[in-house]
Image (cartoon, rainbow, N blue to C red; front, side):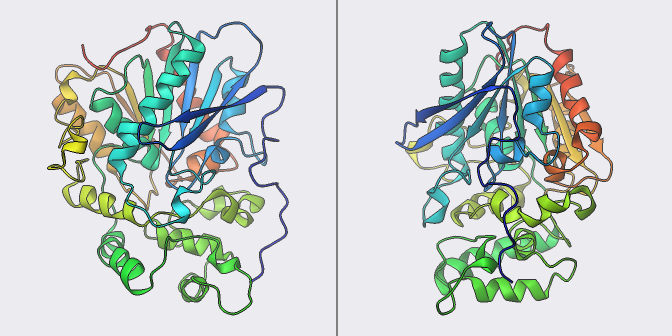
Length: 381
């Protein structure tokens, strides 16, 4: 199949109107260049700032989609200043296009702390900071937070998964076999949802696999959609419910999801095996600043967290339900967190769905509003 004509420009900012948008560049301790987008209206110092963290292989673009009321616009309309961080797993950076040894510990240790530090330098110590994080962006931010690397957060919203990952049986099989097969047999540098659109001459690398996967997914005729289901979860489709997406969103999934560095799967596989966020290389002194078990210090974490998940989550299943229940036990007698199940939603559509401004966003803002008067919170009591 040829790639459909592009109706919405790639990396467009057209979804956010009447806002000052600036790009901020940061350099991590391990010498990667990353970026943040700042969205604000007016020049008065903000009382509350919201930091958005995308999932692995997506980007800020999932929060600024012009085909529906997007999260950045929704927050701006309610008086918040918004920052969105494109960490090393972002589609807007090139790091996942090449073979590499990145794992989730590097994101937790180097990316999120650097982003929060830069944000604080720009907005000052006064504004309350609220974080909305998704997928691997949620896992790794929570790793940073529970490791004591981030302070000054007033509230968190975590979508789909955090520190207790559970995945479907088919995903377990794929995670067992795919990294070796892709790295050592096929020698692919990554997995890419755009393989089905690669032009000639000849047979481009990855396109035959994409064609095989197309045969296993008769539910639609969008190759990028099929590859996303192969890359993440178990289902037809796996990462969202088709009915929740606008038609133009479905057609441009190859612009919204990027390639994945296969090494990330190795760390996710280990966490999913243990149902717990753990350090990838516990005996390597490079990671001494991180705990071997990220839940070890959970009793000291005082930041209130809203855990959300779709009831059709075919990527990380009931992971956030388990995390909520786990913290209820570990943080006794405190009960500062909350859980909200989104009926009819999956893993990704709580942010990319056509009706999210009605079905999802009010719950996120209600949680932030509940903690706007709480002042800045730290990690430890």
